[in-house]
Image (cartoon, rainbow, N blue to C red; front, side, top):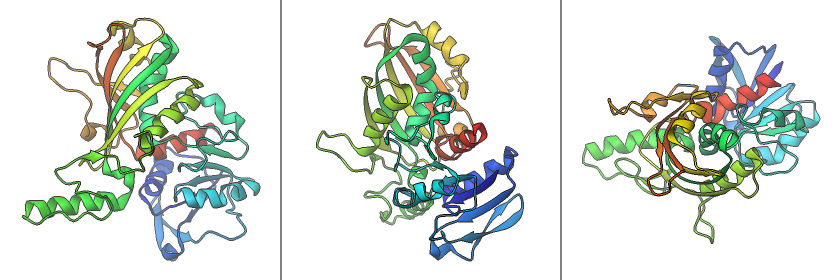
Length: 328
């Protein structure tokens, strides 16, 4: 396959390059694209420099698969033009996720949707991917009807600049200097705040609506009820989520554990005696989503509570996209 990465200099673009090399992806050529200000730079692939090019005006990227991670505006403007030149676009932005023409895919959950593409395939939001790695196997076994989700989202979800801001602010606070927000609306060092996305008239922010609407589409459950509270926390990489899930029938802890133990992409980390459960530090750099704290919900007999952590840049973005391309 001829591969193009749009947004090759960003955090997800860099992760895509590493994963394509690490997984031995069968590519015959690789082109790297970014904004005009990045033209002339190079990115590294398998120890060799690859020149960074500006996007061509005619939309022909000379690729069979295009990984798009340069932002929703770029994808909205160009994705279908890239597809018209014979490429399948695996889009990692929010531009096409809810478009009825575009399959929204987590390969461990709904791989059959890949075959329905018309030139563009959407990568879900990171928090949705991580949640569904745990919820989908439970749904297949017991019939998911409702979930409440609290996310603890690393700054990496806002890009490389946000990681730098966390590090800079941490140094400032430790030096006795007030933290100076730039990428975020509030100080992130030694702090947390409601996710920095637009809040709607219903009181839910954009990140929370993504989790609801994307989960409905991926699972094929238009009536699924999800209430989410998304929070930004001072963690560099890997998100965590606390989930309480209800099903068509009462589910025991033993049944839930059995379903999760067999789930692809899930690694159980549930050591009650040692008090060791999923943590962002352990999840960073891993392909699997770590799942633990599995227990019956004390507030609703028959419901299940759990906690997970997963690498937002890896499985929450780049790895999911590469897995889609591998199936293509």
